[in-house]
Length: 197
Image (cartoon, rainbow, N blue to C red; front, side, top):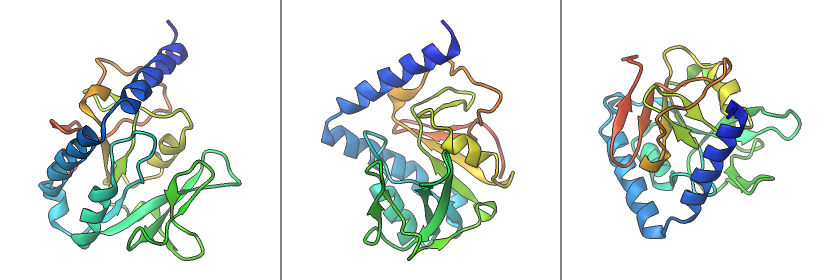
């Protein structure tokens, strides 16, 4: 089986599993991941952190993002370009109230209201994913948004994937342009692959 077909099958498998989750499990999983993050040694200091707004069964980030804001971190969320395919920028937010839905139905900052940030200044970025393996390889949605972004980050920026435990695969087939993650947090474990601190 070629890489493209394998990735398509892996994406379909995880999407089906996520769609079958009940609200109770979703909440418990997000709370468990939030606990790991709250104990993260890096987050003891006030940092520039990028996160995302969960969508279509992704691990719920609502309470995680609110926790980061309450802890005093500078929190930024992505805004997808409507003119350049595969491009997104990050804008600092203070709460969820001024976010708006984009063309995919995902809540995102308003470029007219929120401040655009220099991604080179990020200390930590929380990354959505479809699948992962123990080497930090990430299977995304296939649009290439995060692979393009991760290449532009400072080397010292810590990349952390958020996922359910069932999103782990023995091996994720990767291409030369794919960017592995430094850490993965699931409801049951905190996997550290690259030591940067």
